[in-house]
Image (tube, rainbow, N blue to C red; front, side, top):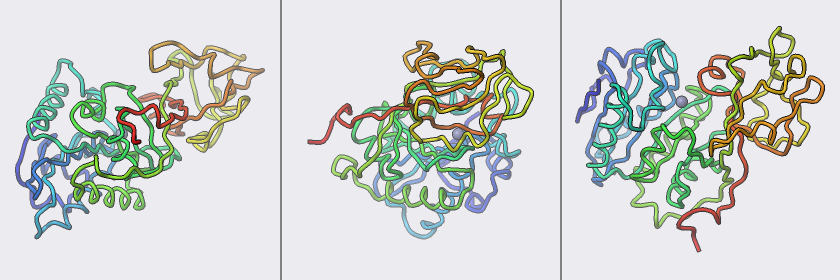
Length: 337
Ligand SMILES: [Zn+2]
């Protein structure tokens, strides 16, 4: 299902997300040469509605229409079928950012091939560009507690999350090969997010290596748990006839340290078992982080959520949120002196 090209189709730079399916036919890896041989890998549209990556890559490559790229690039354009209709993924499809691990099926084979090609090309760095639906800062995610990965991430944002869960993502897979970063560039198409992404990609293109690069000051967090609403419980927002009534504007809690007692939702009949809270090591840790007092679902200790959203589809397709704690930089590998 993967096409590999060594030339950019002329229409690519001005194509709308919905036009890529007919332009490319399907998921495509485009390898372009540059003055430095090791390519910068950029992954876009793994989720078909997250268009910032496309807009940023188009803007970046337009600058090099008649001048050579400072470094080779490889652009992976993922779910063009879903992009045609502006969806994260289509019914029956696998999530293109959950296939970067051994598995059987065409999507797994595609991801495996992309990884192998990039391994052979001695990939310089991997940048996977995403958007989210809630109110979040622009932030970067790394999957390896390594200073070079952090240096790369810090060029995009001073908010960086270290997360290894889920372990099936593009960034996790590329972390074994090179500095590897997921960008969370705000809402899809947000112009400021696009501009920040273009600036970041341009910096990466011109960088000789990460080792000699200074580390910008960052707030580093790590994901400790994933929170889902249990399948047996209905959910919605305050005033709706559902088991879990989430607070309106719940996404305003993202990247804010919540005091114990902060109310996140009202739950029917004081139900203590409406959330599934899984630690990254696999343990169930609901009662470490949440409690129900009366009908209020509260934070049981100081904790910081990310990816809270008011988009009901995302809550069922992905999760309600991730929980994070601060990670001291002293816990990184290859720490600076
Ligand atoms: Zn995404």
